[in-house]
Image 1 (cartoon, one colour):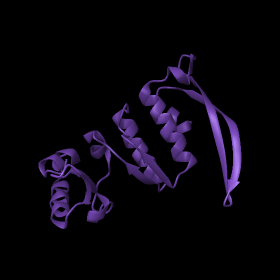
Image 2: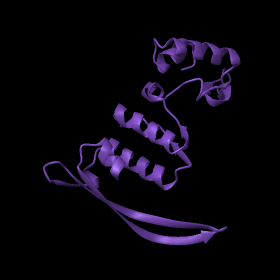
Image 3: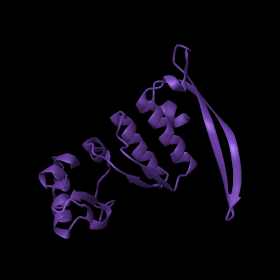
Length: 173
C-alpha cells in the first residue's frame, strides 16, 4: 500500500483481505483471498472506498499487489492502459528493483518509451519479440534478426528518437 500512496494523491490506505480457502499441494502452500476492501484517505481527510477509484488506479493497485505477492514473475497484458506515464515508469523501476521477470504486452508506444532499453538489458536478439501477421494470415512470433537488432541498437545509441519511433521507422511496429 505504501507504493500506491507514493504514486497517487492519497495520504493513507488500508487493505483488508478475506481468506476464503487454503491448501497445500506438492509442498506449496496456497491461499485464496477474496473481497478486497481498500479504504483510501485524501489530504483533506475524506475517505474514499476502492469502488470509487479510477480504472487506472484500480489497475495500479492490482498490479502492485501482484508484484509484491509474487516478486519473481509477473504477466501483465496492456500495462499502459489507464496508467499515467509516471506510474508506468515507477512500476518498471520496481520490477527491476525486485528482480522480477516481467512478460508485458502493449499496443501502446508509451510502454516501450518507458522501458530502460539498453544493450546491457537487451543485449541479444532473443529478448525482443515481434508479433506479425504473415501473408498466409497466421500470427507469427519471432525474434529480431541480427541485422534488425544491430540497426535498432545503433539508432537507440544515438538517443534522438523514442523507442517507438525507432521501431516504426525500422518497420518493427
